[in-house]
Image (tube, rainbow, N blue to C red; front, side, top):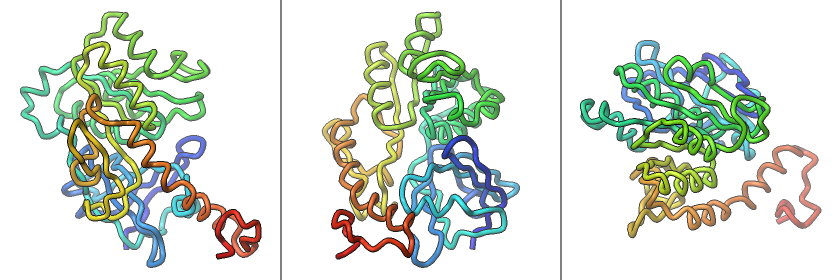
Length: 294
């Protein structure tokens, strides 16, 4: 069992947990993920690693409940446990595996959208620990949904932008990218992590500006070993699987339209499961729409 040491609500419907998993923490690197399973009957859920502490043997995860399985994580508190906590999985960020002298030459910008701020943080923190500066844009719909701002400010030059202008700069992250470049900031490497539609438009913006861009693809994963094919995507003229080949890829080569279309294939089933979980014993499926009567 993997004990939860800390559990808190970060903002809105976004939650953070610190989990005791020393073997995972020993080998984890920024960019990787874990697969978590609450109990014997539970679904396996992939979650990116937000932070790790090798000395304490802990992994920090951040999640936003969107279906029945992740909704069951919300009531968990310190002292509760996960049955399985598998990782680290996937490939670490290129920035953490390239020769340091090469990384030091880059002018790096991170673009973090919503919950995507969580996997950006360990990369920015890793660079800071190795004496490398970077800029980070944290984007959120409103002020109340901004997460990890104070943590990020300790490791990077941080710019916050909100869609409604309620905090920080006003506008979407793409506008902030253009504004920073117009103000004289120079970048040759960008890492964008967030909702797929955000990453798509970030890539359109950075391509126009001539900035090489990496994205982290986090579609639905099932087994995390490349066997099921749920996270299949097209990168350039090649078929890739996010769980084993990624999750990071050249954003200018990713077929986002195909990836977004593929992601919608699971929404109906996920919605049915969430409704059954929310209604509990009162759920009978009599509406004929959710499949509960079959």
